[in-house]
Length: 211
Image 1 (tube, rainbow, N blue to C red):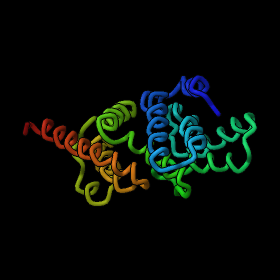
Image 2: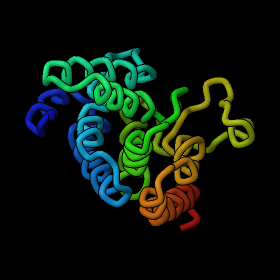
Image 3: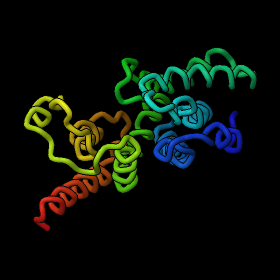
């Protein structure tokens, strides 16, 4: 089983949004959900510690669109060296490949659903608001900009339209709660979802001078 010290070394070059503190939060949340749902804790823990190991610090001009595939491949090598059985390695790989919000591989196992939920809970609530703002800043985008009518209708931006943290909230974060799988994950998401709505309502109102 990969330990905390090993995992911390894998994320030394990670960006502030996908760093080891994110991994630890996801791991702790995944274990909490796993205990409530009766899942395999070893698979959940290994997948949590390895889920962002590749692509957590993309080079300039690169994206994280295939980080789930690369992280699953990395996990295979780690677990092979530890002598894990093939069936359990495949289970961890599936969890990692299926954890990405926009992945074409949907979570099938209980453990994969738990990792998906734990990872998505980290884009909700106070932590989610802070990470979304930080990611926009890292990408050179504004914290807030008014979305175009086209974006509000279709999710597609106008030419040269910014993708502010508010855009990401409207495009993804407000929908996350309804994408979760587990009973415990959904329960935990409710309050975090409400906080996120209130945060971005307040942000928009302050920018517009209404509050």
